[in-house]
Image (cartoon, rainbow, N blue to C red):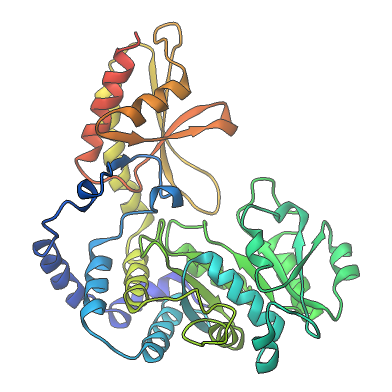
Length: 401
Protein backbone atom coordinates (compact mmCIF):
# COMPACT_ATOMS: atom_id res chain seq x y z
CA UNK A 1 0.00 0.00 0.00
CA UNK A 2 1.36 3.40 -0.97
CA UNK A 3 1.95 5.86 1.90
CA UNK A 4 2.45 9.62 2.09
CA UNK A 5 5.83 9.25 3.80
CA UNK A 6 7.14 7.02 1.01
CA UNK A 7 6.15 9.65 -1.53
CA UNK A 8 7.78 12.51 0.35
CA UNK A 9 10.97 10.49 0.86
CA UNK A 10 11.34 9.74 -2.84
CA UNK A 11 9.80 12.83 -4.39
CA UNK A 12 13.07 14.48 -5.33
CA UNK A 13 14.22 11.48 -7.34
CA UNK A 14 10.83 10.93 -8.96
CA UNK A 15 10.12 14.43 -10.22
CA UNK A 16 12.94 16.98 -10.45
CA UNK A 17 11.60 20.43 -11.33
CA UNK A 18 14.79 22.45 -11.87
CA UNK A 19 13.95 22.97 -15.52
CA UNK A 20 10.48 24.20 -14.51
CA UNK A 21 11.89 26.74 -12.05
CA UNK A 22 14.15 28.28 -14.66
CA UNK A 23 11.36 28.18 -17.22
CA UNK A 24 9.01 29.89 -14.77
CA UNK A 25 11.40 32.82 -14.45
CA UNK A 26 11.65 33.08 -18.22
CA UNK A 27 7.89 32.85 -18.49
CA UNK A 28 7.47 35.99 -16.38
CA UNK A 29 9.86 37.87 -18.66
CA UNK A 30 7.89 36.70 -21.70
CA UNK A 31 4.49 37.75 -20.35
CA UNK A 32 2.12 39.09 -23.04
CA UNK A 33 2.30 42.85 -23.57
CA UNK A 34 -1.25 43.06 -24.94
CA UNK A 35 -4.26 43.49 -22.68
CA UNK A 36 -6.39 40.85 -24.39
CA UNK A 37 -9.40 41.17 -22.10
CA UNK A 38 -9.50 44.91 -22.58
CA UNK A 39 -9.37 44.44 -26.33
CA UNK A 40 -12.35 42.09 -26.06
CA UNK A 41 -14.30 44.45 -23.83
CA UNK A 42 -14.06 42.12 -20.82
CA UNK A 43 -13.54 43.13 -17.20
CA UNK A 44 -11.36 40.91 -14.97
CA UNK A 45 -12.42 40.36 -11.37
CA UNK A 46 -10.83 39.39 -8.08
CA UNK A 47 -11.92 35.89 -7.15
CA UNK A 48 -12.47 35.65 -3.39
CA UNK A 49 -15.14 32.98 -3.86
CA UNK A 50 -13.08 29.92 -4.77
CA UNK A 51 -12.07 27.74 -7.70
CA UNK A 52 -15.50 27.42 -9.31
CA UNK A 53 -15.86 26.32 -12.92
CA UNK A 54 -17.99 29.37 -13.75
CA UNK A 55 -15.13 31.57 -12.51
CA UNK A 56 -12.49 29.80 -14.57
CA UNK A 57 -11.19 27.47 -11.87
CA UNK A 58 -8.02 28.23 -9.95
CA UNK A 59 -5.07 30.22 -11.20
CA UNK A 60 -2.40 27.85 -12.50
CA UNK A 61 0.87 27.79 -10.62
CA UNK A 62 3.86 29.44 -12.38
CA UNK A 63 5.51 26.01 -12.69
CA UNK A 64 2.45 24.72 -14.56
CA UNK A 65 2.39 27.68 -16.95
CA UNK A 66 6.09 27.16 -17.64
CA UNK A 67 5.56 23.46 -18.34
CA UNK A 68 2.71 24.21 -20.74
CA UNK A 69 4.82 26.79 -22.57
CA UNK A 70 7.56 24.17 -22.84
CA UNK A 71 5.13 21.63 -24.34
CA UNK A 72 3.80 24.23 -26.77
CA UNK A 73 7.24 24.74 -28.28
CA UNK A 74 8.75 21.25 -27.95
CA UNK A 75 6.90 18.57 -29.89
CA UNK A 76 6.82 14.83 -29.20
CA UNK A 77 4.46 12.09 -30.35
CA UNK A 78 1.22 12.22 -28.37
CA UNK A 79 0.96 8.52 -27.56
CA UNK A 80 4.51 8.51 -26.21
CA UNK A 81 3.79 11.60 -24.11
CA UNK A 82 0.57 10.08 -22.79
CA UNK A 83 2.43 6.88 -21.86
CA UNK A 84 5.28 8.68 -20.11
CA UNK A 85 3.04 11.07 -18.19
CA UNK A 86 0.78 8.20 -17.14
CA UNK A 87 3.73 6.21 -15.80
CA UNK A 88 4.99 9.22 -13.83
CA UNK A 89 1.56 10.03 -12.35
CA UNK A 90 1.03 6.39 -11.39
CA UNK A 91 4.39 6.44 -9.56
CA UNK A 92 3.48 9.68 -7.78
CA UNK A 93 0.08 8.45 -6.59
CA UNK A 94 0.78 4.77 -6.03
CA UNK A 95 -1.83 3.41 -8.44
CA UNK A 96 -1.37 0.73 -11.09
CA UNK A 97 -2.03 3.04 -14.00
CA UNK A 98 -3.02 6.65 -14.74
CA UNK A 99 -4.15 8.89 -17.54
CA UNK A 100 -4.77 12.60 -17.99
CA UNK A 101 -8.30 13.36 -19.17
CA UNK A 102 -10.10 16.48 -20.34
CA UNK A 103 -11.56 17.01 -16.87
CA UNK A 104 -13.16 14.79 -14.24
CA UNK A 105 -16.41 14.47 -16.19
CA UNK A 106 -14.51 13.07 -19.17
CA UNK A 107 -12.76 10.65 -16.82
CA UNK A 108 -16.19 9.36 -15.74
CA UNK A 109 -17.39 8.96 -19.35
CA UNK A 110 -14.24 7.06 -20.33
CA UNK A 111 -14.24 4.96 -17.16
CA UNK A 112 -17.85 3.86 -17.65
CA UNK A 113 -17.16 3.04 -21.30
CA UNK A 114 -14.15 0.95 -20.27
CA UNK A 115 -16.21 -1.03 -17.75
CA UNK A 116 -18.96 -1.68 -20.30
CA UNK A 117 -16.79 -2.83 -23.20
CA UNK A 118 -13.60 -4.02 -21.50
CA UNK A 119 -11.20 -4.87 -24.39
CA UNK A 120 -13.86 -5.84 -26.95
CA UNK A 121 -13.11 -3.74 -30.04
CA UNK A 122 -16.52 -4.37 -31.59
CA UNK A 123 -18.32 -3.13 -28.48
CA UNK A 124 -16.04 -0.11 -28.29
CA UNK A 125 -17.03 0.92 -31.79
CA UNK A 126 -20.77 0.55 -31.26
CA UNK A 127 -21.12 2.89 -28.24
CA UNK A 128 -23.41 4.55 -27.24
CA UNK A 129 -25.44 1.60 -28.53
CA UNK A 130 -25.05 -0.88 -25.66
CA UNK A 131 -26.89 -3.84 -27.18
CA UNK A 132 -25.26 -7.08 -26.18
CA UNK A 133 -23.05 -5.66 -23.43
CA UNK A 134 -23.16 -4.81 -19.74
CA UNK A 135 -24.70 -1.37 -19.41
CA UNK A 136 -26.05 -0.93 -15.88
CA UNK A 137 -24.33 1.24 -13.25
CA UNK A 138 -25.22 0.75 -9.59
CA UNK A 139 -25.45 4.08 -7.73
CA UNK A 140 -26.66 4.91 -4.24
CA UNK A 141 -29.79 7.05 -4.24
CA UNK A 142 -28.01 9.54 -1.97
CA UNK A 143 -25.21 9.78 -4.52
CA UNK A 144 -27.34 11.12 -7.36
CA UNK A 145 -25.94 14.55 -8.22
CA UNK A 146 -25.69 17.28 -10.82
CA UNK A 147 -23.01 15.55 -12.86
CA UNK A 148 -24.28 11.97 -12.84
CA UNK A 149 -25.42 12.46 -16.42
CA UNK A 150 -21.79 11.79 -17.31
CA UNK A 151 -22.43 8.18 -16.24
CA UNK A 152 -24.96 7.75 -19.04
CA UNK A 153 -23.16 9.53 -21.91
CA UNK A 154 -21.67 6.28 -23.21
CA UNK A 155 -25.08 4.57 -23.03
CA UNK A 156 -25.26 3.22 -19.47
CA UNK A 157 -28.42 3.03 -17.36
CA UNK A 158 -28.40 4.01 -13.68
CA UNK A 159 -29.77 1.59 -11.08
CA UNK A 160 -30.48 3.19 -7.68
CA UNK A 161 -29.85 1.35 -4.41
CA UNK A 162 -30.23 2.24 -0.73
CA UNK A 163 -28.81 -0.79 1.06
CA UNK A 164 -26.43 -3.71 0.72
CA UNK A 165 -29.46 -5.95 0.23
CA UNK A 166 -30.49 -3.78 -2.75
CA UNK A 167 -27.04 -4.19 -4.28
CA UNK A 168 -27.06 -7.96 -3.88
CA UNK A 169 -30.54 -8.15 -5.39
CA UNK A 170 -29.89 -5.81 -8.33
CA UNK A 171 -26.37 -6.75 -9.45
CA UNK A 172 -26.72 -9.11 -12.41
CA UNK A 173 -25.06 -10.08 -15.66
CA UNK A 174 -25.89 -6.61 -17.06
CA UNK A 175 -24.03 -4.74 -14.29
CA UNK A 176 -20.99 -2.97 -15.66
CA UNK A 177 -19.89 -0.92 -12.66
CA UNK A 178 -20.69 0.26 -9.13
CA UNK A 179 -20.34 4.04 -8.70
CA UNK A 180 -19.47 5.95 -5.53
CA UNK A 181 -19.49 9.74 -4.98
CA UNK A 182 -17.50 11.56 -2.34
CA UNK A 183 -18.17 13.75 -0.65
CA UNK A 184 -21.97 13.94 -0.58
CA UNK A 185 -24.07 16.50 1.26
CA UNK A 186 -26.44 13.90 2.70
CA UNK A 187 -24.08 11.04 3.57
CA UNK A 188 -23.94 7.39 2.53
CA UNK A 189 -26.26 4.45 3.06
CA UNK A 190 -23.31 2.20 2.21
CA UNK A 191 -19.91 3.59 3.34
CA UNK A 192 -16.94 3.50 0.98
CA UNK A 193 -15.15 0.55 2.57
CA UNK A 194 -18.28 -1.59 2.60
CA UNK A 195 -19.11 -0.52 -0.96
CA UNK A 196 -15.66 -1.50 -2.25
CA UNK A 197 -15.74 -4.85 -0.47
CA UNK A 198 -19.20 -5.58 -1.85
CA UNK A 199 -18.10 -4.75 -5.39
CA UNK A 200 -15.12 -7.07 -5.07
CA UNK A 201 -17.24 -9.88 -3.68
CA UNK A 202 -19.71 -9.55 -6.54
CA UNK A 203 -16.96 -9.23 -9.17
CA UNK A 204 -17.99 -5.73 -10.32
CA UNK A 205 -15.56 -2.83 -10.90
CA UNK A 206 -15.95 0.09 -8.48
CA UNK A 207 -15.54 3.71 -9.57
CA UNK A 208 -15.23 6.77 -7.32
CA UNK A 209 -15.77 10.37 -8.33
CA UNK A 210 -13.43 12.17 -5.92
CA UNK A 211 -13.12 15.30 -8.05
CA UNK A 212 -13.71 17.72 -5.19
CA UNK A 213 -11.79 15.95 -2.39
CA UNK A 214 -8.71 18.13 -2.71
CA UNK A 215 -6.96 20.08 -1.16
CA UNK A 216 -4.59 18.89 0.02
CA UNK A 217 -3.20 17.15 -3.05
CA UNK A 218 -2.00 14.32 -0.79
CA UNK A 219 -5.67 13.29 -0.48
CA UNK A 220 -5.20 11.72 -3.91
CA UNK A 221 -2.81 9.19 -2.43
CA UNK A 222 -5.32 8.42 0.32
CA UNK A 223 -8.06 8.04 -2.30
CA UNK A 224 -5.99 5.56 -4.29
CA UNK A 225 -5.25 3.61 -1.11
CA UNK A 226 -8.96 3.13 -0.40
CA UNK A 227 -9.03 0.50 -3.12
CA UNK A 228 -11.51 1.63 -5.76
CA UNK A 229 -10.82 0.07 -9.16
CA UNK A 230 -11.04 3.53 -10.73
CA UNK A 231 -10.98 6.99 -9.18
CA UNK A 232 -11.03 10.41 -10.80
CA UNK A 233 -10.02 13.94 -9.84
CA UNK A 234 -10.46 17.42 -11.23
CA UNK A 235 -7.16 18.96 -12.28
CA UNK A 236 -8.08 22.57 -12.94
CA UNK A 237 -9.38 23.69 -9.57
CA UNK A 238 -7.50 23.31 -6.29
CA UNK A 239 -4.76 21.20 -7.91
CA UNK A 240 -4.15 24.36 -9.96
CA UNK A 241 -3.44 22.52 -13.16
CA UNK A 242 -4.90 23.22 -16.62
CA UNK A 243 -8.58 24.12 -16.16
CA UNK A 244 -9.77 21.55 -18.72
CA UNK A 245 -7.70 18.65 -17.35
CA UNK A 246 -8.39 15.82 -14.94
CA UNK A 247 -7.04 12.48 -13.75
CA UNK A 248 -8.26 8.90 -14.05
CA UNK A 249 -6.35 6.50 -11.81
CA UNK A 250 -6.69 2.81 -11.01
CA UNK A 251 -6.50 -0.71 -12.36
CA UNK A 252 -4.08 -1.15 -15.22
CA UNK A 253 -6.52 -2.99 -17.47
CA UNK A 254 -9.43 -0.59 -16.95
CA UNK A 255 -7.27 2.50 -17.52
CA UNK A 256 -5.88 0.87 -20.66
CA UNK A 257 -9.43 0.27 -21.94
CA UNK A 258 -10.38 3.85 -21.05
CA UNK A 259 -7.47 5.14 -23.10
CA UNK A 260 -8.79 3.25 -26.14
CA UNK A 261 -12.04 5.19 -25.78
CA UNK A 262 -10.20 8.54 -25.83
CA UNK A 263 -8.47 10.65 -28.46
CA UNK A 264 -6.50 10.23 -30.63
CA UNK A 265 -8.42 7.02 -31.40
CA UNK A 266 -10.76 8.11 -34.18
CA UNK A 267 -13.60 5.63 -33.56
CA UNK A 268 -13.82 6.18 -29.81
CA UNK A 269 -16.76 7.54 -27.79
CA UNK A 270 -14.34 10.06 -26.30
CA UNK A 271 -12.78 11.31 -29.52
CA UNK A 272 -13.94 14.84 -28.74
CA UNK A 273 -12.46 14.71 -25.22
CA UNK A 274 -9.03 15.61 -26.51
CA UNK A 275 -6.09 16.39 -24.24
CA UNK A 276 -3.29 18.57 -25.59
CA UNK A 277 0.42 18.11 -25.02
CA UNK A 278 0.33 21.28 -22.95
CA UNK A 279 -2.35 19.78 -20.69
CA UNK A 280 -0.54 16.44 -20.30
CA UNK A 281 2.62 18.14 -19.11
CA UNK A 282 0.81 20.86 -17.17
CA UNK A 283 -1.26 18.31 -15.25
CA UNK A 284 1.83 16.29 -14.36
CA UNK A 285 3.66 19.35 -13.03
CA UNK A 286 0.56 20.54 -11.15
CA UNK A 287 0.42 17.19 -9.37
CA UNK A 288 4.16 17.11 -8.68
CA UNK A 289 4.04 20.62 -7.25
CA UNK A 290 0.84 20.11 -5.28
CA UNK A 291 2.14 16.97 -3.59
CA UNK A 292 5.14 18.93 -2.32
CA UNK A 293 3.01 21.59 -0.63
CA UNK A 294 1.92 20.63 2.86
CA UNK A 295 -1.50 21.45 4.25
CA UNK A 296 0.19 23.64 6.86
CA UNK A 297 2.01 25.69 4.21
CA UNK A 298 -1.17 26.03 2.17
CA UNK A 299 -3.15 27.23 5.17
CA UNK A 300 -0.36 29.60 6.18
CA UNK A 301 -0.51 31.33 2.79
CA UNK A 302 -4.28 31.60 2.86
CA UNK A 303 -4.26 32.70 6.50
CA UNK A 304 -2.06 35.66 5.61
CA UNK A 305 -4.55 36.74 2.94
CA UNK A 306 -7.37 36.58 5.48
CA UNK A 307 -5.34 38.45 8.11
CA UNK A 308 -5.07 41.38 5.72
CA UNK A 309 -8.83 41.45 5.09
CA UNK A 310 -9.73 41.04 8.76
CA UNK A 311 -7.34 43.83 9.77
CA UNK A 312 -9.06 46.14 7.29
CA UNK A 313 -12.53 45.72 8.83
CA UNK A 314 -12.14 44.55 12.42
CA UNK A 315 -12.49 48.06 13.89
CA UNK A 316 -15.96 48.56 12.33
CA UNK A 317 -18.59 48.31 15.10
CA UNK A 318 -20.85 45.29 14.73
CA UNK A 319 -18.58 43.37 12.31
CA UNK A 320 -17.64 39.81 13.28
CA UNK A 321 -15.10 37.65 11.44
CA UNK A 322 -14.16 34.01 11.76
CA UNK A 323 -11.42 32.04 10.01
CA UNK A 324 -12.08 28.30 10.08
CA UNK A 325 -11.26 24.98 8.47
CA UNK A 326 -14.22 23.16 7.00
CA UNK A 327 -14.77 19.54 7.94
CA UNK A 328 -14.88 16.95 5.20
CA UNK A 329 -12.74 15.06 2.70
CA UNK A 330 -11.34 18.30 1.29
CA UNK A 331 -10.01 20.56 4.01
CA UNK A 332 -10.12 24.22 3.10
CA UNK A 333 -9.61 27.47 4.96
CA UNK A 334 -12.46 29.99 4.80
CA UNK A 335 -13.28 33.42 6.19
CA UNK A 336 -16.80 34.19 7.40
CA UNK A 337 -17.91 37.82 7.69
CA UNK A 338 -21.04 38.86 9.59
CA UNK A 339 -22.44 42.10 10.99
CA UNK A 340 -25.08 43.42 13.36
CA UNK A 341 -28.08 44.45 11.26
CA UNK A 342 -28.95 47.15 13.82
CA UNK A 343 -25.60 48.83 13.15
CA UNK A 344 -25.13 48.09 9.45
CA UNK A 345 -28.26 48.23 7.31
CA UNK A 346 -27.22 45.97 4.47
CA UNK A 347 -28.79 42.70 3.30
CA UNK A 348 -26.38 39.86 2.54
CA UNK A 349 -27.36 39.55 -1.12
CA UNK A 350 -27.04 43.31 -1.59
CA UNK A 351 -23.57 43.15 -0.07
CA UNK A 352 -22.54 40.46 -2.57
CA UNK A 353 -23.95 42.51 -5.44
CA UNK A 354 -22.22 45.68 -4.23
CA UNK A 355 -18.84 43.92 -4.35
CA UNK A 356 -19.66 42.48 -7.76
CA UNK A 357 -20.60 45.92 -9.11
CA UNK A 358 -17.52 47.60 -7.68
CA UNK A 359 -14.54 48.50 -9.85
CA UNK A 360 -12.48 46.39 -9.47
CA UNK A 361 -15.15 43.71 -9.18
CA UNK A 362 -14.93 41.13 -6.37
CA UNK A 363 -16.72 37.78 -6.21
CA UNK A 364 -17.40 36.12 -2.84
CA UNK A 365 -19.55 33.21 -1.60
CA UNK A 366 -23.13 33.66 -0.41
CA UNK A 367 -23.99 30.41 1.38
CA UNK A 368 -27.71 30.17 0.71
CA UNK A 369 -27.96 26.71 2.27
CA UNK A 370 -26.29 27.95 5.47
CA UNK A 371 -28.53 30.85 6.39
CA UNK A 372 -27.10 33.28 3.85
CA UNK A 373 -23.61 33.38 5.34
CA UNK A 374 -20.93 35.52 3.70
CA UNK A 375 -17.82 33.47 3.08
CA UNK A 376 -14.48 34.12 1.38
CA UNK A 377 -11.90 31.76 -0.07
CA UNK A 378 -8.24 32.61 -0.64
CA UNK A 379 -7.63 29.72 -3.04
CA UNK A 380 -7.46 31.99 -6.08
CA UNK A 381 -6.27 35.23 -4.46
CA UNK A 382 -2.79 36.57 -5.11
CA UNK A 383 -0.75 38.67 -2.71
CA UNK A 384 -1.96 42.25 -3.04
CA UNK A 385 -5.48 41.28 -4.03
CA UNK A 386 -6.25 40.71 -0.36
CA UNK A 387 -5.45 44.38 0.31
CA UNK A 388 -7.89 45.48 -2.40
CA UNK A 389 -10.62 43.13 -1.19
CA UNK A 390 -10.25 44.38 2.37
CA UNK A 391 -10.51 48.00 1.27
CA UNK A 392 -13.60 47.37 -0.84
CA UNK A 393 -15.37 45.42 1.91
CA UNK A 394 -14.55 48.16 4.42
CA UNK A 395 -15.89 50.89 2.13
CA UNK A 396 -19.07 48.92 1.42
CA UNK A 397 -19.86 48.20 5.07
CA UNK A 398 -19.14 51.76 6.22
CA UNK A 399 -21.43 53.14 3.52
CA UNK A 400 -24.39 51.41 5.22
CA UNK A 401 -23.79 52.28 8.87
